[in-house]
Every structure is written in structure tokens, then in C-alpha cells.
Image (cartoon, rainbow, N blue to C red; front, side, top):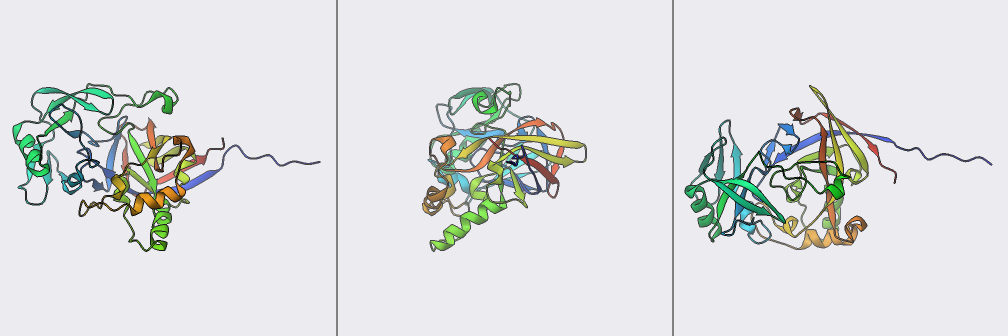
Length: 292
């Protein structure tokens, strides 16, 4: 009697098709052709955050108009624009007084960005708010439970340095939306940092390691946790209006047993190798499927 062994791994080839950073947590993203990878994610990703009078972060969950705030990164400054507002210019390398801020259950060291920024956000979003900058000397770690004990720093992200999604995953969702008579949506709704082309839908869920060929060698990223989805993907980034169609569609096929049945889309990842390397659209990505 013969038997066939199941291979421990099979390789998949992909291409890095899009790159995004979100300089101000929960505001619009910035699509880039290239970005510097750091141990804490892409450079300047979630470096700033809007907080309430108690120093706790606010997001599109309660303030969907944050989707209309569009950052632009320049060499020495970040420029923020929003409908009906004059542009807010902030020097990238300047902060004001030290502050404390809370993101989920973590209280972290930060810097307040001053009265002009505070008034700008308060005026546009309709409540008393302030803007803070993450203190790079503070070490905020991702959940050791999900990283397998590896220390993975991040700034103001929800919990992990990077979010990886694929074009095929979005295409699968849009096919379901079309069948339900709904309009297609863009990947921007899911706020990924890295988008992969050339893989099957949700292959990002099933790989153990992403190896990206860079000019300086190889960056290695490890997907560690499915990204549980709140109502933010229901918010149209162009209008800040919410429609439950996206969440309803995901509910039908993306309930994730790894998250006790919560819906997921995309994978949170940590950086194993590549601090300081340049990621660029078009780079080759190799990965091994995980069989467990």
C-alpha cells in the first residue's frame, strides 16, 4: 500500500502592487510608489493621532468625517486638507509639549502638536480635540500572544505594524456586492499598507512568511493575526457616508474561527527583517503556504 506525503509548504509568487501609509490615524491614507520599512511599520504610518479631551483616540467609528481629512506628505511637512477648511501645515520634525495618549488599552508617551492643530481638528469634527505625535522613544509592542512571543513595535496603529491585503480578496468581495446589486468598493476602505497582486483571494490568510526582494536584499514580514473588521469599511472614503452593504457581504462568508466568528479581511503582519529598506511598487514577493 502506497501513500503520498503532503508537502510541508508550497511557494506562492506575488507582486507588491500598492503601498499606503496613514499618517494621521483614521484619516485618509496616502498612496505611495515607495516607502521606507521600519521595525514599527512603514515610515510615518500612524505617527499622528487625534485625541479627545481625556487623551483617548477618536476614529471614524464615532467620527466618520475623519475620512474626509486628506494628508499630503512633503519633504519637511505634512499638509492636511478637509472640505471647507484652510490647509493645515505641520513640520514633520517639530512637536510641542509632551503628552500622554491612550490607544485602545495602551497609554503611551506622545507629544502635543499645539493649539493651531487642536483648533483645526475641533472645528472640522465638531468637538474639542487635539492632535498628538507618537514619541519614538516609547516602545509600544504588538500582542505577544499573536506574535508568538516576538517583540514587534508599532506606533498608533490598532495593534500591529502592517496590514496586508490582496487584489483578489477585494475582487471576490466586489463580485458578491455586484450579485447583491451593490456598487463595487476600493481597497482604501480596508486601509491596508501592502496590497499584493498575483495571488488567489485571501492567500494572505494562509502564508507563513512574506519575502520581498528589495535593492538592499530581502525584507521579511510575518502575517500573525487576521484583521477583525469594525464598521469602518462601510464608510465611503469619498463622502464619509455609511452603508452596511460591505459588512453584510463579509458577514456571509468571512466569519473567522480564529477570531471567534468575527469577520476578517486582510492580515496583520510584523517585521522580521528589513528595517530601513525601501519597499517599492512592483517588487517581487515570495511566500510559503502554511499547513497547520
